[in-house]
Length: 305
Length: 275
Image 1 (cartoon, each protein chain N blue to C red):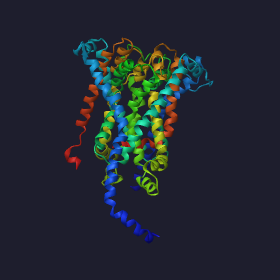
Image 2: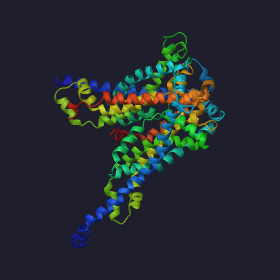
Image 3: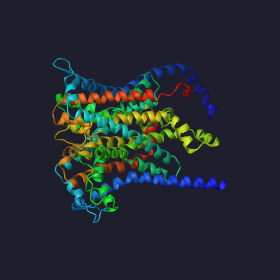
Image 4: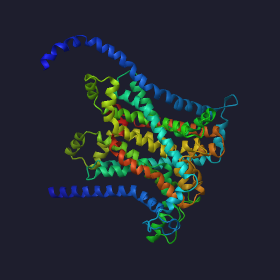
């Protein structure tokens, strides 16, 4: 059967180069047509508003102005919002990354039921900031679950008011816990994906040389996880800079964050310009932190091979 | 000597299982507790010390929330916005994902990098100027404008996910279909699409959850047509405890179900995205 078809195939093969060139020219346009809708959409609803946001924040009275930026900086809530946002990120990220790495290593430890573990660990990935805030409010509120536990264990004789204006430490602590609970999943998933791309041979080689678990983690796993860690750090920092519903659900008016102030200036004070100034500040902090991570976690030349 | 090593290994194994269970408890316990609060009687919500099981089990608190002013309407708005968003992201994003997966062309890498870098983009910075624009265009406070905003947020993600889904469908199969007389469109519709369908479904579910959860843009871009998170957020500090607890549970419900369907694709999706 194959021999009988051979003669027919010959002319096609001889004209193959010509056909291929024609096909390539026709195909060349197709990908751009396929990309066109998303490019246009992102220009209109992504690039344009971004430029416009800086315009809202820095233009007024027919020229450039720092008026709105000054209003923002001199507002009473500005310093606490900036401070809380930065402290939140500084506490949150180390806790979150340690926990996420431990969870990822457990998922990768080839336990029985590791598929179920991965499902359970990744549930918070789909939980919103607001819902997570409410969940932790239920735990920390004065008649909540934490007080129930502590009084029944005899640690406290009567409920302690954790979420009070005077207890800024507990307010921040509850927000941090809620965020650790909710947003560690995304880091964990990125790290599990990163771990799976590490060749088994590397870890087996480490075993052959008698490396302890500690050595393996610090000298093999973490260096090879660097790209995943970088992605996760960039993503988590940018997302943490935008957190606001958690704080509103847990702490009410007791704690404020940069994004919460942007919301307040837009909704309560009806001032999109100062709100845009806050948004621009968040944007600048996002860019600065991304640059910092890209620079700080760059792969050194000698390890790049 | 050898048996000592075996004992150590076994202990290590047991410790790993214990740690795994501990992490699972850390994730599940808060969900369980809010579930208990949501399915207790309204009186029990104010009770102290709090019962740790919903006894008696009651839907009173949940019904109180669902029958509260505006909740059903807001749920409807949330679902409408989420469905519009997933339709828009698929229609606009899937072709781009297909192009990234199937064609080698000039500018492919730059486009990919651009998309990757827009993924974690601040919602805050887009919402405020878009609110101003939508007011000017007469689109403010409508499910359509919010869906456009959510599409902008979800689109980079959809493009990357669909591209990894299409990349996992062997190109050979499409080529085989074409040698058997299909044109490229038919080959795509009859061969690539059915094979990609489960992955695409996972991607749309993720978009749905993203939109269902999103609160900042929702609360900025809507006034009377609030979505559920936007409604709950604006009334949160004046609302009674049963409303908050039932609302919190109701809002996190989809994630429990959706994660069940998405979980097989979770690693593929993020593994690809990381690369």
